[in-house]
Image (cartoon, rainbow, N blue to C red; front, side, top):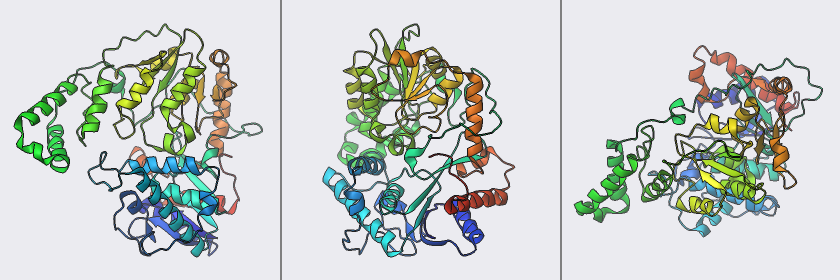
Length: 485
């Protein structure tokens, strides 16, 4: 096997090296994507900088080869282009201080074609037969290499973290995430306390409660000046204008809950316009007695939408699609993600929603658990709100590749669905536990995300590396079946 391996960071490199050792010469890492100590520094493509890997630059000095036509001529070309451009846009000058310098839509298109052709040349030159990704590709560089390798016929293996402690998922195509058949699988039921909500360490309880409003922070003022230095230096000589800006920012903080510090990391006038837009919903009164579909928005751009949502990475399209088939008298309750910034949303997004009479936007302190519990059903691209809903006994509708998509109570959106019948779905909790147990049995032992290491302070890293490496090798050899697909 001549392997293309996306292994950024020392912990992923340890998985890769251990796997090669275990293969006893069967695997050659023909192309390692990572940081400076790898063959190619993949992240340099995201920032358009000159940081090189051991084999030099991915694009510099390469002539057009035409090897990329298998991807560029595919039926999925336009969706892949949209997905990758969104991922690249997150490091544009209006959303990041350390940004690339692409502004025009044609420049994005040109750059995409250049990188795709370069990736195809590397895969061809290095005679890649297999590709392994330790995370679902959701950045610019790994998405390009994933899509090109797939189009050129390489055998793909993708690993993904799971909601289950010490377990991870696998698949050969990211579109397969969540597709599995529990029929015939003998496994212990997975214990789920009926009506309980999952413990999501990355979501804080205070985000669901009423509290005090905030005050402008020193970091916000510092970042305002940082923005002016970079984008509007003449305004530094206009103290009246600066005072007006600070007053405007301070007024915004006074409307938002104190746990939100919108400009602690970054300030831009686009960010200010976005937060002023969502602040107008803070005094919204909530009536949970109505019939409604609950749609909590994903933080974006992220894997959950950009990589796994397809056309429904556009979350406004999800809401418009629901509104088109909404039964008379129903509402759509939309809640913004507490982590969201203007990197994928702005006033225009909310103007688009405002055109839909059935849509009501919830305030920041609206309790997402209560909104799920009282909804006719919840709807999401791939969000964990669906997993929470079926544990609460409420149906969930998904528009993308959600890991829980084959569990009882979950329906994948189609035009043929009758929303009133979806709302009437009864979830057999014992069956939910049985099917979840079957899913867990098809997952693999090990922790593949560094994010989870602090949650398991007693983790034996050597054993974990060996477990992950052994499983990845067996998946590549097709000695074990992937979780999904």
